[in-house]
Image (tube, rainbow, N blue to C red):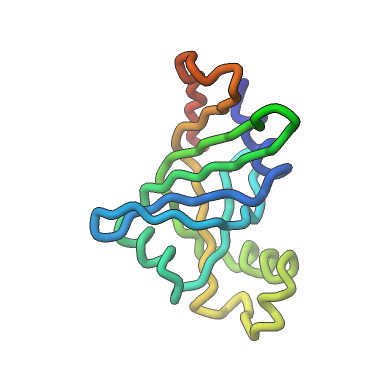
Length: 142
């Protein structure tokens, strides 16, 4: 499997769980992927959220996407370092893609609108069938 399979799986299963750390303690929460493409995995958050503060202090992250099926399901784990993107075109697009932001009064120029991407790291798939096998690591750097 390659990076494109990771992108496709993430886009098909956008609800994920994100792991960060705060004061050397793990923190996990559900998050909705904005989109993934050949440049990485994109997310949107707000500057007042704990997630943003945690990532500013320690930009290392792990994200887990999961798809349920009739067996045990399939999981994609992505770990890497986030980069924050201050790109007006992306901020305009996220407002279009997520209308609830506009309803909340957020504009592309709003300082609280935060976009981040995982563009470098490692990924692997998990299924019950490969549970005890060595991980097939997919390194990516885009």
